Length: 191
Image (cartoon, rainbow, N blue to C red; front, side, top):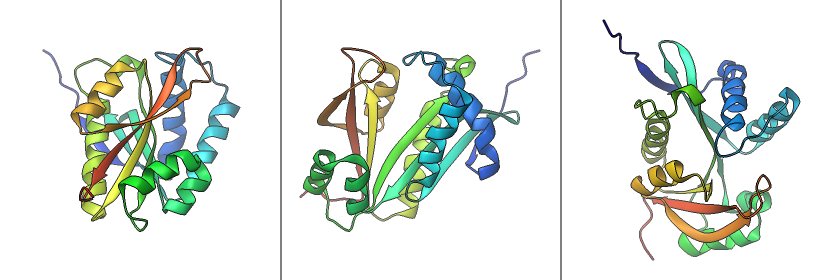
């Protein structure tokens, strides 16, 4: 008899973060990063996420075990520019009014043993994120950064309506690979 595992997606609580850090560490050890992150490096990165403007997130659990997470920050345009640079901020100004909240999609990780298992954890997390943003904000601009060699993530983002900004930065992990910034407008009329 095959027992199907139940996937649940819930709001990230601070009490979930230590478990999510372990998933984060394992996810970064595999494709496409292949980084061996120390506990101290993981803690340092997470402090940056948590301390940034309006930290929010979701977690995915299978039968009570945390198997994935997605987190983001909400910025005003000025705070976004201060945190992510003026080139990207100029792009943001070109596609939306100054009072529109900017959602920085800071991270999405899935436990490696659950990637590609048919449960679509990453897709479900990102879809729920977009649904929650749309429900809670009448208009917003979602900005994300994806590695050019992470084709599964790019395909999911494209299916959900993300578009390329045309802005790229070199990857610090691999020579010749770039991170590209993507965006998704929600509730913003084309100008």
